[in-house]
Every structure is written in C-alpha cells, then in structure tokens.
Length: 317
Image (cartoon, rainbow, N blue to C red; front, top):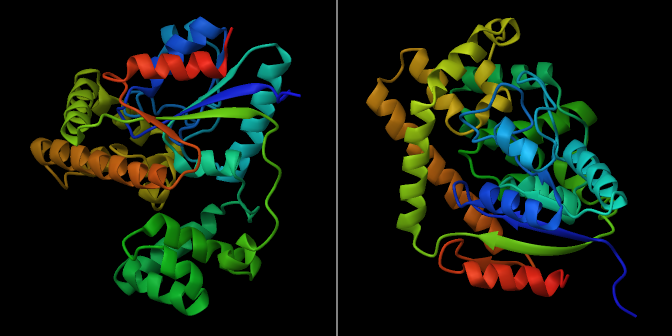
C-alpha cells in the first residue's frame, strides 16, 4: 500500500538563489499555498531588505507566516514549527499543496526534524547579556563563560557567533538547565507529510555572488534606507536600549544599514559591508544544507528540466 500521507514541497537554498520565484510559479501551477520559512519575513516593516514578496506576488499565491510579528518582538524556531504545522494542516485540508520556501535552516530543522522545546526568548535577559558582553569586551568573553557552564554547547558555537552564544546563556539563566540538557529531551512530532526536499543553488559560486550584489543594489534603488529610517522612527525601536540585539535587526543588511545611518560607515562602505554579510550568510546556509538528509540539489537555471522532472515524479498529476 502506498504512502497515504499528504504531500508537501520544501524549497531550500541560500539567499538570492531563486526560491521565491519558483515557489510562486509552482504555487500557481499546483494550486498550492506558500509557507514562508524565513526569519526576516515574519516581521512587519522588513519588506525591501528582506526581499519579501510584494502585495501582487502574495495575491498570486496565498502566503503564510509573513508579517506576523512586530520588529521589536521575538519569534522562536519552536513557535515557527507550531505555526507552520498548523498552516500545513489547513492547506492540506483545503486539498492544496504546502510549499515551504525559505533559507532559515533552523526553521526547517525545527519543523521537519524537530528541536527540543526550550524557554522562549526574554528581551530583558537578552539586554542584560548584551550589556554584560559589552562590559567584558565582547562576545568572545561570553563564549568562555558558556564553555564553563555548558562545554558541549560551546564546542558547537563559534566564539564570533553572538546570537547563538546569547541564546545559550539565556536558556541557562531562564531555566537553570543547559542547552545541551534541553536537547537531550525527546523531540516533538514531525508533521505527517511526505516531503520533497529540494535545494536550489547556482553551481558556480560567482553566479550567486553576482546575484547577491545585483539584488542589494536593486534594494537600495527601491528605498531600502528609507525603510530602515521608518523602522528607526518607531517608538519601540527608537527607545530600545540595544535595538541591534533584536532578532529582527540581526537580519542581514538591516544591521549594516542601521550602523550606516548612525554615521559609523559611509555609503560605499555600507554597501560593501552589507554585500559581504549577505555572502557570509549564503556560505553558512550552504554549509547547513550540505548536512541535510534526503536533499536533492539543482541549479535553478541550468537544471530547470531536472527540477520539473523531480516535481512531476513526486506529484504525478
């Protein structure tokens, strides 16, 4: 007897690899609905710099988990997984195909493989940790503190990764348990779907770098800096003691734009830093993708026929 579970498609890949365009095309062709798997798209007001599908694109195919939080609010991978499972169940109940599209590996992992349920983020604890890091001279010192508390977790985190160091220390302070201890707990159930896992990535890294630079220049032309100025004017962000520690403003490009508007870098240096940060993000995404099981890789341009064949074999109707 064949697999009777409903079908879903996961389009993964580094930033600027063409996931959004393909998700829209397949969504229209299949009568599907898109579930965004992107940690920046959840935030209202982060539109241009996150390459968020515009109103016309969202009208072509229904989208889920876009614009569901304010930029000063936290949103965890566990919350995403619960919301995504609910969205997928609703889509399948309507007789449609969920298309998971995005580049946030932690979200995909939480949804498709499961993550241990840990305490939710606490902005006060995070602000205190950020202040302590500044007092101690940087996050390398906080990494040393984490190594004392949870050496297993510290071994998996680079000393230059403030977001993950902060989260591990936050979990310890909130619960009195290490992140390694939480991860030893049984994982939550996976969604009851058969999933076609596809990775989109240009075979030539230079092509991806060129796409990243061109896309960022188009963002600048579209008013990206004005968008960040509007964010800076929001009372909740203007009055925040450490706005760049907020998850939303850790999104690539936004931190660099914020620092540029603070006068820390001129326009040319801002552009260079933002593009370099985006390339680094793509590198981290590719590294994560190479460790994923059952993942089929395609160049979105030269392997288009292979992509269509993979889809037709998975959904032969």
